[in-house]
Amino acid sequence: MLPDSGHIQEVEIEWRNRKRLREGKEALPPLYTAEDAEKCMELFVPVKYDQIIDIDENIKLRYNDAGHMLGSAIIEIWITENGITKKIVFTGDLGNNDIPLLDSPTMIDNADYLVMESTYGGRLHIRNDDKATLFLKIVTETLDKGGTVVIPSFAVGRTQEILFELDKLKDTEGQTEEFYKQYEKLMKAPVYVDSPLAISATEIFRENMDLFEEEVKQRIQKGNNPLEFPGLKFTKTTEESKALNESNESSIIISASGMCEVGRIKHHLKHNLWNPNSTILFVGYQAPGTLGRSIVEGAKKVKIFGEEIAVNARIEYIEGYSGHADQEWLMNFIYSFITKPKHIFLVHGEPEGQIILKEKILQETNIPVTIPDLGETYELTENDVKIISKVDVRDKYKYVRLEIIERLEALKEGIEGMESVIKEEKLTEDVQDEEIAKLNDKIKQLEQQISNIMN
Image (cartoon, rainbow, N blue to C red; front, top):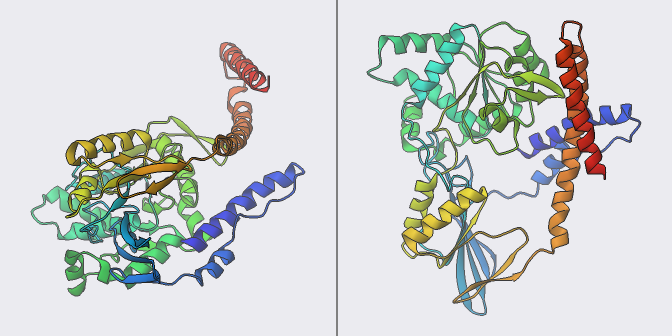
């Protein structure tokens, strides 16, 4: 993942630098490169789950399977200070309990303190036992119209789960004749995994099948590899990726990134969002502020590479593919402790969900809960948890300053994109004078808002 991230840094800055050079500005270096990432990989040391590692005489730790993605871990840390040993458990991202390929998260017996994620702390996943059938219905309806199904998918985890679900469909018993017709249509359609990282990750899944859940292991032992089936194709090169959008063939394209922010998925969205025959099928969490979230929430138009694209495609979101535990399973993780933690810290969640989960924990377990803020340092004493320092307000606003700069960059790109759209679509002779006048008034209002900011 790191080299892939480095490659994205290089590609994104190359695109941005072309623009900067046209403006007479100096080119910027990438934050880091794929080569930097490859070199830093030499510093990593792999460890196995359930192996106690001594950092020094006062600190030891153990990784446990978090069930979120292949290799993800809950970490237990024992720290001895002044002759007293305390144990802190940090969950990292906890997996959804019904991820088909991976084992469920390891339950921990005891902890003095628990630091726990809260991504879905305020909600329950819909228990979607029929997600594969729903997936099949959406896909075949799109193929019947001659459209393309574009699936923005996280390269590691969700992509492999979708491949597993597609493979598993053929073994579903007691289905209708219509189901088998749909399945036959699906099996004739090409399924493209268009992400170099997803291809590499799928290979790593193949090499680590001992970490799969028991049912999947049994399927593999019978000679049925869930990550291989007829019609599955991997597109490695940029040229192969571009060819997908130049083809009139109905197909399924699984491409990263899952939130549509970077990578090849943006090109596939640009070529399919406007098409009413195509479907954009979301299968994972979409964070606020991302392109994926805008589309899921019903945006009529979105901007991709500075161009405004109409959202005419069918937009679907299938519950049940999330890689994160919901409120129920976060609570089950807490319930599983034989010796309950003295205090729980909630991290990695949106404020509303964190507050809901905090109230649920207090109500159900009576364990004290803290939602830490940026830059706070806590001291964990025998009988208390207290803040011993907070981030300086000026430092805190440093991040707001960075956000303003990013927003200005996005706004500048938006205005440039708006200029081309207005010239090409709004100032043509067939547009009514009344519409031109309204547009002129809106631009005047925009000028006034910019003037107000400057003053």
